Image 1 (cartoon, one colour):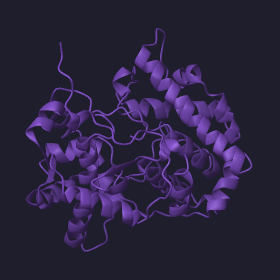
Image 2 (cartoon, helix red, strand yellow; image 1 turned 60 degrees about the vertical axis):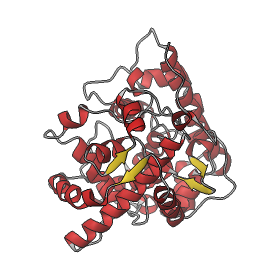
Image 3 (cartoon, helix red, strand yellow; image 1 turned 180 degrees about the vertical axis):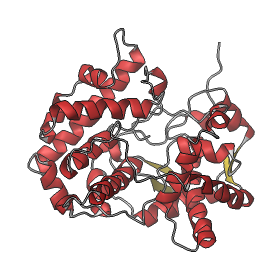
Image 4 (tube, helix red, strand yellow; image 1 turned 120 degrees about the vertical axis):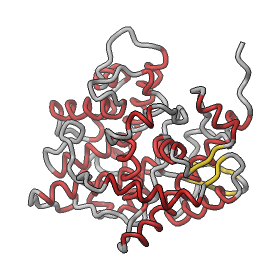
Length: 355
């Protein structure tokens, strides 16, 4: 009989889907993350590892991060790409569920989902946001290319995906004339306005009350802003007139804290976990959303990426943003020379709609 998890790994002081009355600025997210990191008991940042780790990121510099793979990005037009980004990032919370997913040849849960959604857009675009309400669990399983029999956990995942899509579709239908274009025109190419609007939805409002500090991460809303900038760069590079879909990159975004970045940072010694937490993760046991350990990991990730961005800015004598640093860390994990080393260790597993 297995032992019950300790409160460090199971306590959930604030549940998913709880709407926050006030949203912080991106600077406020950073300040809260650093305040939590400064008081952390289970996760520490090792300052002496930041410099060597930053040097190791230079191996990712030759990778063209602006070259988008049409197998996982819908690139038919600026309007179609922007709508695709809204939908795919709305559904981008599978990291804690992907072990239940039969993956395609990419062997990636996210790329399996993104590739399936590209094919769905190929056959269904254009459509109004309210169309998302028609995507029930079985339609989601079709997009994911899953075959019957479906496990109970896979069905739970598909139900959450359907709820997320329906929430986004209803929000845009009720507030933005059931039009993706009207939504983008209303937020006027502003990352901050986009994040603020999306964070009105419960599936985007990931946050915690910890050490008398409100710590909102807003990962999915922020990564949506970043991805819109990527598809805008792609279409501008083709000489396309962008209009309302011309999203600039935002220098103020934080790291997109889920479980991938801390896996790299902890494997390379930038983040140091307590012995109990390290053993818990190594055994593959789930880390509850809202547990002290999960909160401290996400706070330390945001803070460590900010510190790395500052160190790289000094080293390279140009401004390096947190979002750019986040992308380099992610790419390092997937370098052919590094893949086996990272696969030899486990990332923490949290089943959450916010990852």
